[in-house]
Amino acid sequence: MSAKLNLPQFLRIRAEQLAINLEQLLNNEDLENNVNWSANQWSNAKSEVQCAADAIIVRKTRANDYEILMIKRSFAPFKNGLALPGGLRDFGESLQQTAQREMEEETGISALECLNQRMLGEIESRDWDPRFAKGVNLVGVRFDVPENIHFKAGDDAESVHWVSVAELAHGVHQLAFVHSYWLMLAFKDEPSLVERFAVLTQVLRWRNQFIIHLVNQKRQEIFAEQAVLFDNLGDPNTPYQLK
Image (cartoon, rainbow, N blue to C red; front, side):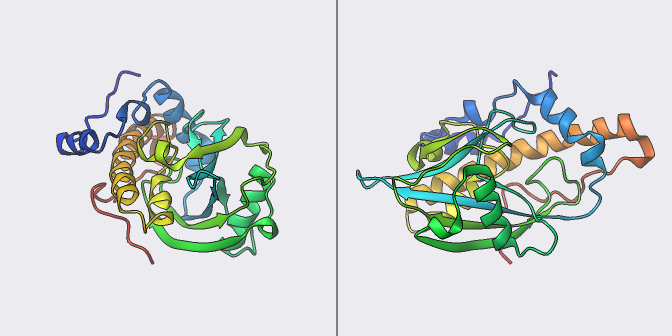
């Protein structure tokens, strides 16, 4: 697939000023797989707003640095990208319970093992996940854990490992969805991190909207009048509004 994202020049300049590496974030190698997976029958059948939650698992190291427990995705979209543990809500759950369950399923860590947990906020987004045309209503929950806590990868993850916040803030790794947004809120008292994660959030939203444009085209090819299409994506430069 030869399509290419044209990121606004002002955003490229700001990323360069903050020493953010855009190469990994905008890696197009798996673009066709991202589009095909997001345009498949399962995704097209999701004709209502989905409810989901993400877990931001944080540990403080002996060197007084912070690290985030990230999963390497086994499946598209964003196969092989790094993601926070998370997923769709099960019937009867609160979204905080969804975050707790997803954390345990994907990392083996129980909420009972955490030192602290804090709700970061709730948003509704049309460009968070290229599979869900009607958008996602989701929350992020920060879980602080002991440095030596045991963890293991669940079925949906190729691997799970600690990643430094500094590396994530500088775009060293390809991030799935718009998970930089939760990282921005998780470290709201660190101005340099907030600034970088805010720019990353804009970049990831531009990337996602580019993918979504191609998903709409693919769905029309496959499903014709039965295609469920994205619309009203919003301005990727305008911050999400917390509920």
